[in-house]
Image 1 (tube, rainbow, N blue to C red):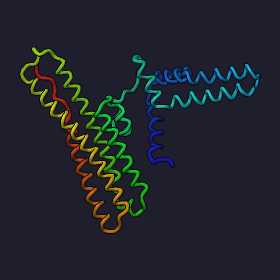
Image 2 (cartoon, one colour):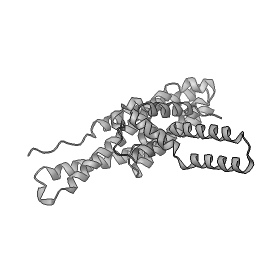
Image 3 (cartoon, rainbow, N blue to C red):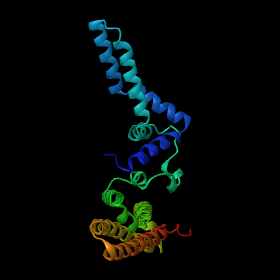
Image 4 (cartoon, rainbow, N blue to C red):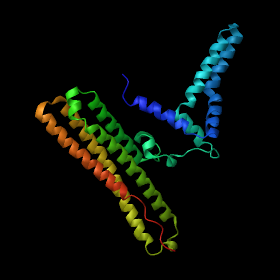
Length: 264
């Protein structure tokens, strides 16, 4: 059964490839032509022809090779691996894209590997499954929970915003700690304490959002088997909680900008 998010993922990969510069696209194509697994297909086809002298093996091998090259150039993971290995290649970096241009799942993969990213990706998976539960419910339940779907999307967007703000704060903390102790003038230690407090707050909110989404998914499942006024009342409470989650995450993200450098 095809999940609802799969077409979006294919469209996302296609648009991501189209945003590459001409030089980057050429580099990706060249890497696809020289990809070991693709060349192995050519080698196998050549050996088969040499042993059997079967003429149709040549066009068949070329067709398979062309298909593999095409699929490689459309594979977002392959494109990322090729371009990240070539520092001299001009490429539109994630920072140059607007958040609305890409999905929260894609933006989450831009985060550095670590506990924060794992929690964000786990929360996004719960959010996706919750939406799927709503979409697979009967028409009555879908109507009751109709407002919850865009609010769940908002939670995902705001959660990733907080996670990216958290990484900026973490980078600022590392920059301050990298300075020699003698250079920590008055005010810098205060900035460091403020940044560390923001970091802890963001980590706590990310963990809390994941736990809330788990509970919320269970509530959605319960609503899907209830009926009448009880379902409507539970759905109304769920929408209120989603509004609160969005407000909390949005407010936290607005406070995540690191303080500017002190006056020299």
